Image (cartoon, helix red, strand yellow):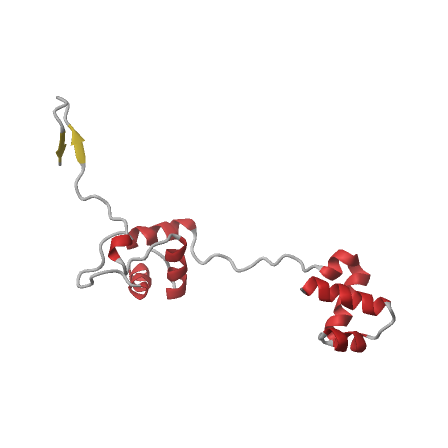
Length: 144
């Protein structure tokens, strides 16, 4: 929609309308129409119609920190708690020095991206507490 409005603004400007007239008919501000015209004069049609790519915010956690948080969530919760909560994960991650600082929303997004729901205990993967060992005589499987 933005590209179409910018193209229409350029058409109106090329037809001789002022920035204020074009802005009124298109529902834009005169400043926006002038800016579109300026970008067209400086960089051509591509620059007038399309925005430059925005870099976006840098990730708050590096992959190692993400893995440490996920590993913590997949372990048993703290003593006295039945399951992990987003708030508890954020507090405990900083306390255990897994990450320098982390907010609840960052934890929530990370858990969602890994499809983890620790507050629903059955969805969290738990590691085995015992290893299986194959016997050398081939008579079956034992446990350590």
